[in-house]
Length: 152
Image (cartoon, rainbow, N blue to C red; front, side, top):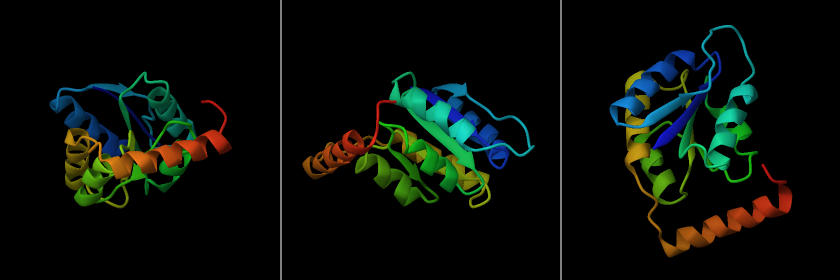
């Protein structure tokens, strides 16, 4: 898989750990920044990752900021993106199985690198369950997008 990754200044350290895990799993990484500890704006990094995923130029995306909250909010504004904020292994698995998420958001200030690496491993190795009830719910989400969003 091709995985797009982006972080703001508060997620730049964890980003390097996550890139290493993604590469160890044999996936291609597209690093969309940032690479500094100087304050930057998280939407400037969430948008390129979300757009790559929405345009199917990347299979999935990983976003990292201090809490993951800002990144997840920004990414979910892009039509076709289903970004989940995840800080535990159960949610990492459930969000793939039930919600078919294509982007994950992590908070460097919330979780340590070891847990973050396991979350990404779990998320990347879990498939969507294809359950009928989950497909029906995702169709409803798509209808919301069609009603309230323009094209990406």
